Amino acid sequence: MKPSKEAGAADPWKECLEAAVELARKAGKIIKNALTEEKKVSTKTSAADLVTETDHFVENLIVSALKEKFPSHKFIAEEATAAGSQCILNDSPTWIIDPVDGTCNFVHRFPTVAVSIGFAVNKELEFGVIYHCTEERLYTGRRGQGAYCNDKRLQVSKVTDISKALILTEIGPKRDPDTLKVFLSNMERLLRAQAHGVRVIGSATLALCHLASGAADAYYQFGLHCWDLAAATVIIREAGGVVIDTSGGPLDLMSCRVIAAGTQEMATFIAQEIQTIHYRRDDEN
Image (cartoon, helix red, strand yellow):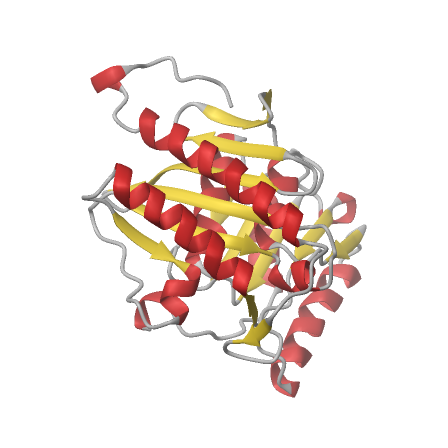
């Protein structure tokens, strides 16, 4: 993470970013150590929507530490929301946290797992921190100050032609026949358009980080949540990419749908090709 050029009162969120980085690394070590251990697994919205004791432990660790340091701030966190907490983004400084992104991977000891911490003020995303637990890669993005992976500046690809693109996506928790039909149809549409390939890696935040690093050219998904998207959105935008709604309009963080790409042309093409899978908004819980 590159240090901010500003300091003190001129950079009011520098301390918050530093706290997020410290906690992401700490949580990442816990997750990495727990990866090979036996796990108690429960389900949430579907048989494919998993949660473990590590999800709860890490979320409590992060939230309690931040509440102690920043008592006036608000929080949106995955497991608290699943337990009934309201998912509302207002003008207050707000932390948006996914303690273990890639829980299914984590359960199966598949090593693509991350911690994601986003931060918004006045409903505008200020910074994002994502830590790849097993590879010890720290992704950071700060509004107006660039995006980095372990201090190396990130830059999205500039591919505009789908026939030269690698596309990333995730399945989402709905697995009913109609949803799966649309999901597979969307993949088929992009493959028929001669995309080089479509990948599903099991972690939305890390897929979005691959996009920010230029290793993929676009990402789309229905059914991801604001805690999957908040930190990564800052990182992608600061790496030169675009993050929009699947309709082609501006991103709505609570809409549970997104297209991200290295170029506007690529994002627009995908928006025109794919069919919508409907999910309830995060702020309707």
